[in-house]
Amino acid sequence: MRFCHRDGSTVHLGYCATVHPAAELDELIAGLDSCAGAVRSALGVPVLGVGLWFPHRLADRLANSPAALSKLRRALQRNRLEVVTLNGTPHAQFTDKVVGTKLYCPDWTDPERLRYTLDLIDVLAELLPTDVAYGSISTVPLGWRVPWSKARNRAAREAIDRVEQHLARTETRTGRTIRIAVETEPGCVLEMIGQATAWLDRYSSPYGGTSRIGLGLDTCHLAVQFEDPAESFELLWRTGVDVVKAQLSLAPTLVDPGDASGRYVLGQLGTPKYLRQVREWGGPGVDDVAQAYELSGHAAWRMHAHLAAHAAPPDPLSATTGVLDDCLTRLVGGGHPLTHHLESEVYVWPRATRTQQALAKRIAKELAWLRDRLTALGLDEV
Image 1: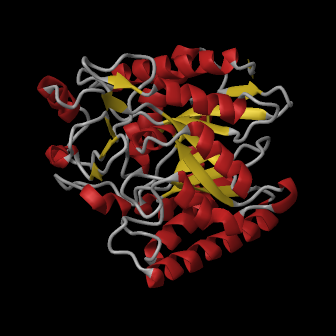
Image 2: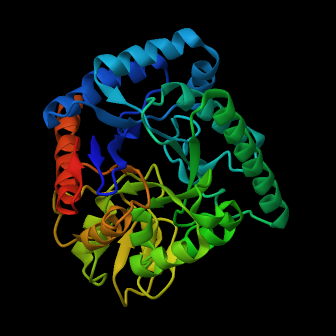
Image 3: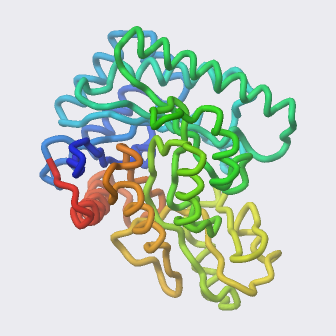
């Protein structure tokens, strides 16, 4: 969906297609036909943005096969979908029963992460609509926090610098501007806004320019860390680090960790295949909810599990709707948008959401909820 901001620029709203992952091109296209197209139809919009994810083998194929890329482009056109952003965080489709920290591998010290990202840049430059300001690709927060060292940090810096050079060459070659959104995430090298701004500061553009490397702001991750939106956006303003892309969802909150039933309900959200980091207000955290017994329980817990905003979480949990609303207001409610890319990134759906048709209905409801919020902030749907 597209919205006209009061300054005349376009703000894009779409959803992250990792909810129907695909290892091969035909599988990806089947997801577009059965789910993404149905979401667009349910919303009744002329075009819908979808944030695609390609595992590394498919990214390599699309970057090097004009025929494969043309086949994908035709699928997007017939479903009236557009791609302005890609999810470049997971490198492969994991078949492991437990993925854990492997989700962040290869990290930015591994040349394979660089190769994968360069492929994504080349693909997005070809898929990007001609009338958009820029395309964006989200990526890992450098890597998991251990093992990390000054040497690994230098290697990551060198790799990101090479990405920046490739982005400049791509813009010269194609006339398309592509930008990288480095996310923050609990447990990673860059898990809080302060860490991210310190690392990304060298890529900020002076005098109000546009940087090619900036922040991917995830409202669930920010909420899990109990970061204050006002302080976070103030820090971004002071450092000049751009918000390239914002991913929108809620984090579940257990106000009273002493409630055994509440701890049980929290532990049932999401899947143990992936880490479900838990943070305690004013205190430490753990890398997975299964370790939450190590926390004191003296104050509220929040967990890394991307919830939808349009539906209440199961009792006795609450969710971080206020954080999402605050971030949206700061991102697009002012005189100029801080980002032009908004993406719904919800992973935790009711267990009854098993078919593509049921998933499409849920996604459409979530995007409709976000559309109402953007309209209330003064944006006009176009």
